[in-house]
Amino acid sequence: MNNCLEINGLTFRPYLSAAQIAKRIGELAEELKRDGADESTLFVCMLSGAFVFASDLLRAMNTTAEICFVKWSSYCGTQSSGELTEQLPVTADVKGRKVIVVEDIVETGMTMRRFVEKMKAMGAADCKIVSLLHKAQLQTHAVHIDWVGFEIDNAFVVGYGLDYDGKGRMLRDLYAKV
Ligand code: IMP
Image 1 (spheres, helix red, strand yellow):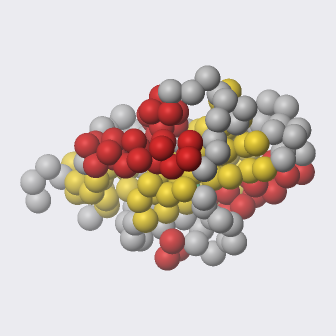
Image 2 (tube, rainbow, N blue to C red):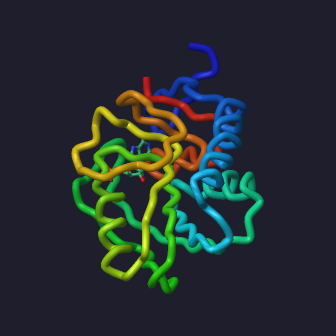
Image 3 (cartoon, protein in one colour):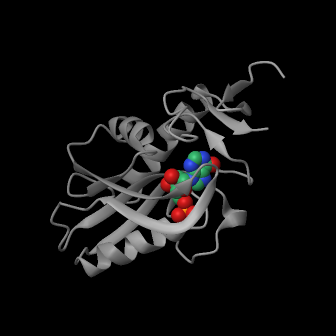
């Protein structure tokens, strides 16, 4: 297939182009502002995968709001391990704050469910979620995703911040495993 690429022995095909992603991010930025995200919001970027999305989304919002970075991971290769490790904890004081977590992709929902619970336990007034991608058919943990860029099927995807075994994050487009 044309424009396919190979990473560590797996083949990936073009899935969503940089232009399609950019267009949707412009819409999402407007949706978040319309729904109340403002200068008082604390944005939390879930590393590593969301670093590209958070950077484009928040600059599209052209906001002076605060951002902090956390790193929780559950993935090993192309599958969820079912275990969650907190590699970089929340350091910001979230008490009484309106929090929006920026995530790259929600699959089982385990990461986001636990994260929202953690924000509530730390005293956040509210914790909403914006995710670029959502594999709704694979979600098993109950958590509401407030804003979704694209609902996708069960494909394993790389590019635009998302990786396969550490590779592919800097690709401008999104690719799906063949
Ligand atoms: P969940 O906790 O099962 O919802 O998994 C969410 C995390 O799994 C994301 O933050 C990603 O790090 C990773 N993940 C899930 N699906 C993919 C994928 O298709 N490509 C790359 N990473 C993925």
